[in-house]
Length: 119
Picture 1 (tube, helix red, strand yellow):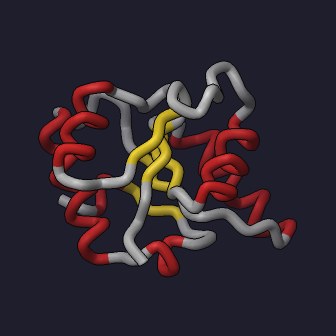
Picture 2 (cartoon, rainbow, N blue to C red):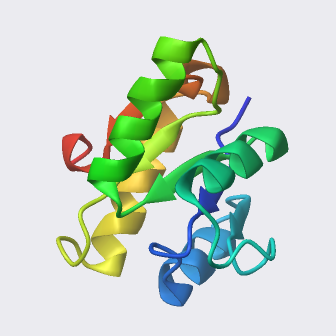
């Protein structure tokens, strides 16, 4: 199954979302979902309920949350962590598309990927 993406409110750059959607990627944002100003765990739970991999610039908090979920045996649909202002929109898109071409939604379950590894 193809990876579908959920961008939390920190990472939902309109230009990136538009570019991904133009390439046929299933993307929802925290704004689309009415999830603005929610706790990190709420974003991860929502993305998981919707079958979407969560994308965020909030590397520290979501990596810690992933570790907590794994320790508690709580499943999630996957997390992609990106450094804010580290890559251009075009580079973020290329890296995300490369990751999505290489991994399935099943392979992302309970897994964290760092966008920096997909150059």
